[in-house]
Length: 427
Image (cartoon, rainbow, N blue to C red; front, side):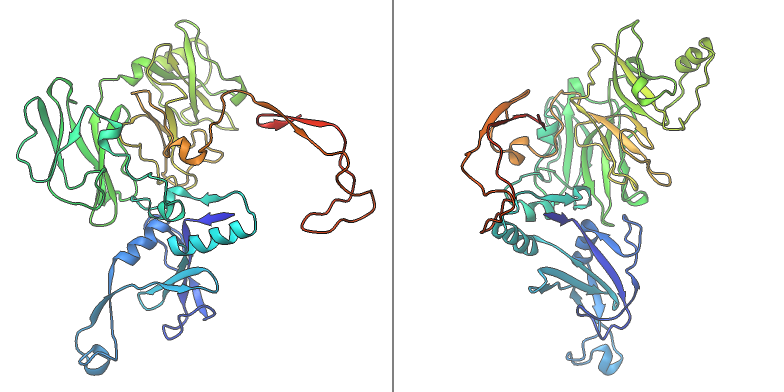
């Protein structure tokens, strides 16, 4: 069963008719991040729910409808359509959106259980808010929101509220009103790093000027994040002692299946890009081989991104971030270093407009799953290939041409013998 972390929005033809079935004039206004009419991401819907709107209530004495005075303030209140199993809200007189939350997810999950539906799919997790409200509403036992600074990078810490200094052995790198391990609790906190292992410089990137794009520069590490009053977010980006260019380089455009790296010195293929930076080594390399090295590959070709053996980056601790076509969820997770950006990376389509994807690595070598693997697959999954056998009762089923009864019907007798399944495919 599919679950949407977004809602369909409409502009109503009349503010006097707001229930399902009323006439609408067009799609709803575009959201600040989704950027298109008729669809709002879950985080955009949450922003509407959190805002205060002004309206006129004729039941309130001296309200605007009765005396022309000031308006009264109230929060946007959701309506639960229990028959349809969905919620909707109305704001700004004529804006309407339907969506799911914990209550309606429960209705759908109960339906799935009652009808023996054994799987679920989310579209898409990057549309959730910073507190993972939708994800926790669907799967309350998943603790995805508490992967904060001290878990991702235990060399630096965020102080308690309203302390005056970092204390002996630590340098103050900056300040923040938030601790990712204590979401919702805002106060003045210090960002502190060990004196013998502090970054040389840090700065906040993103924020009000780019509310959907708190992306660091290549070679910088995300130390922590914070939300802005406008609803955007910022990343606290710090210089890292890793020299990416000393470890890795791009090569000329080639077919996807023909990518190779240098053997002297030995290198391994890390990923590929469509638009890679042309450094002097690559320019000289291309000139020596008398080949054309365009800044952007065309005709389905890509540039291999290769790193020397021993580099602290591998396909096991690096991931592309940014969902095409908007690619606005391209910020690196806390503790990760941005290696490079690209208009496509390993996606099946490029980003639209000026959007880019980010290739981020956890240089501490920890795995990169945003949710603990055991939360998705609670039972032990053996590594490698798994072979097992299924036994079939040769007397079960009905003869060919006859129809059985009950919830499952067979139109041919099941085959005798055994079927072998190799993990991931049937043989």
